[in-house]
Amino acid sequence: IKGFSSCLLFMLCPNFRKRYPRGEFWNDGYFCAGCGSDFERALRYIENQEIHHSYF
Image (tube, rainbow, N blue to C red; front, top):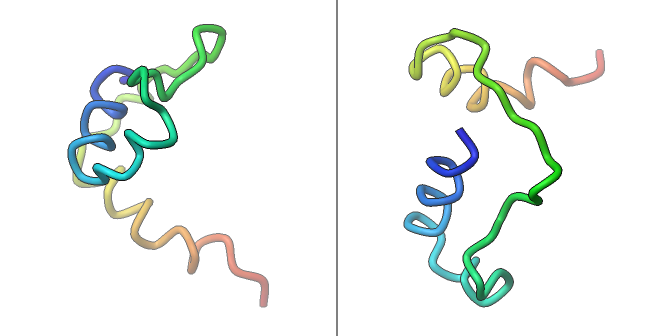
């Protein structure tokens, strides 16, 4: 997940290369695991994150 997400991030946001010139977005000590959800479900969560976490 870390490798794919950093590759996608650098591809979609080329300016991130200026901040992370070595191409290492994630720290070696950072753990990331999939939750078994499909891509569309995760994308829907990210797109609606502001609504999901908003205060009423």
